Length: 139
Image (cartoon, rainbow, N blue to C red):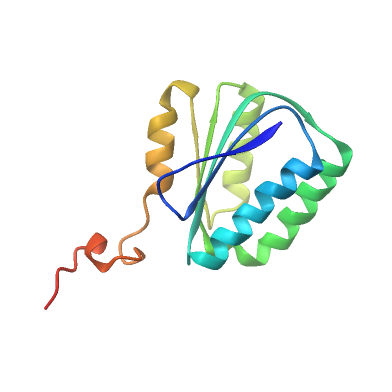
């Protein structure tokens, strides 16, 4: 199961994954990410992983294929927060953090869900859509 969850910041795509993830569910997440990329210069992700067992073969192939297409597009991504208590996911996340240095990646325990959501919602100074969020208050 992979469900999109709401986040107050428009540039953040948040989702919850658990059990078995299908290709159809993964495609909904990919569509949400692509829509956010069209609407915002930088996109962040929050992925809550709770009891994830596996991806179907078609979902796994779709995930790998989409991931490969994003390698040349990493400048559109800002942060990825992974919320989990599963140790194997934490280890995989640390590996991805080393491989994809253009994207800030952090793991959070499930009890720190709110902190993960807040961290993913932050944008670097100078990249807010409202200039006042960057400290500009008019001339």
